[in-house]
Image (spheres, rainbow, N blue to C red):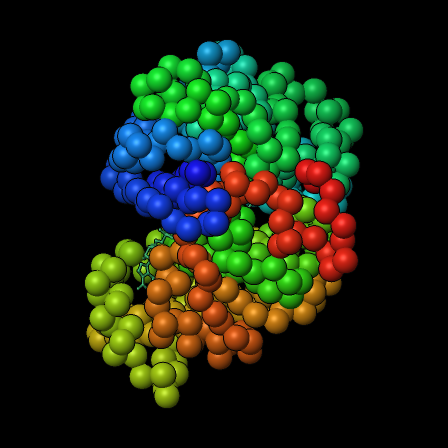
Length: 430
Ligand SMILES: Nc1ncnc2c1ncn2[C@@H]1O[C@H](COP(=O)(O)OP(=O)(O)O)[C@@H](O)[C@H]1O
Ligand SMILES: O=C(CO)[C@H](O)[C@H](O)COP(=O)(O)O
C-alpha cells in the first residue's frame, strides 16, 4: 500500500491506496495556526497526526510514502535539521528586491526572477542574522521528508525549479554556482524516486514495515495534476484551492517570468502554468464553506453579475499578472451576498481563462479540456461559469485531492502514461 501526504495552505491530508489505486483511508489535519512562528510546530504536529490517524494495521502494510508541499515554501535549517528561522510561504514577496541583483546573472525571463521565487527568498534570507546558524536551504516537502527518512538536503526537480535548478540538464546551472552561496542547496532527484527508508524509530513507534521507503516529493498543484487522471497534451488541471493554479500538459516548454509563467518537467512532457494569488482564500474571507455551497445554488447563470473584480487577500499577484504591488479590486460590493459571490466567481474565472490564453499564446499546446482539483472543484455552478470563459469542457477530476496524486507518485513514480509523449518508449526514471 502507498501513502500520499499533501501539505496545502489550509491543512494537511493523507490518502492510502492499494496497488489498484483504490482509496483505503483518508485522514486530515486542518491548520488552525495563527502566527507564522507556529508554522514549523504546526507542520510537524500535522505530519505525525496524519500517521497516528491511520489504523495500526494499515500502517503495517504501507511500503512507500510521498509528500507534496506548497511550491516555493522554503526554510533554512541547521546541521541537525532544526529550522533557524520562520519559513517563507509560497506567496511571500519579501525577496522581490533581490531581483535586481539576480537580473545580472540569471537568463532573461527566468522563473527565479519572479518576486516570490525560491531563489529570491534565499537571497533575502541570507541577510538574516539567523543565517549564521544555517547549513541547509530546503523546501517544505524536503524538510517534511527529512522528518521521516532522516536525510537532510534532498529535494526533487519539481520543488527545485523555482530555486533555479535546470530541469532539462538535471543540474544546477553555472550562473547559479557563480552566486557562490554559502548555504548548501539540496541534492535534486526525480520526484517519486526512493530517498531512503523510514527512520527505524518512527517505523517502530507507528508499526510501519522496516523497509518502508520515503520517496522524493512534488508540489501540491502537480500532485493534483497526477490525481486528476489528465494524460493527453492539451489537457489541463486548475487547482481551485486557497490559490488558483493552472497546469496545461504540453509538448512545448513555456517560461516567462514577466507574466509568472513557468514549466515543470513532467517526464518528457511539460506542465506549463502559473499560480495566482486569487482563489479560495479570498472566498473564505467572505463566506463559510456552507455559504459558498448555498449561495452558489442561488446564482442566476442566465445573467452576468456585471461586476469586475481582481480578488486578492492583499496587494501582490504572481500570475497572469506578475506584480507584487497589484492591489485587490473588490468594489463595488453589492449588499446581496449572492450577487457578490457571483461577481467573485466570474472574476476568478476570467483570471483563469486569461492565464490559459497566455500559455497558449506563448506556445503551449491548445487547451482541450480542464479538470478541476481542490476545494472549489465541488462547486458545479462555478464549473459552469468557468466553462463559459474557457470555451472548453470543464470536467471533474477522477480524484480532486493532491494527497491522492502523491500516493500515486509513491506507487508509480513519474513512469506513468501521463507524462510520456505518444509513442514514447518507457525509460527508467526521468
Ligand atoms: N463550495 C465551494 N465553492 C468554492 N470554493 C470552495 C467551496 N468549498 C470550499 N471552497 C474553498 O476551497 C478552499 C480550500 O481548498 P483546498 O484544496 O483545501 O485548499 P488548499 O489545499 O490550498 O489549502 C477554501 O479556500 C475554500 O474557500
Ligand atoms: O500557490 C500555491 C499554493 O497552493 C502553489 O503551491 C504554488 O504556487 C504552485 O506552484 P507549482 O506550479 O510549482 O506547483
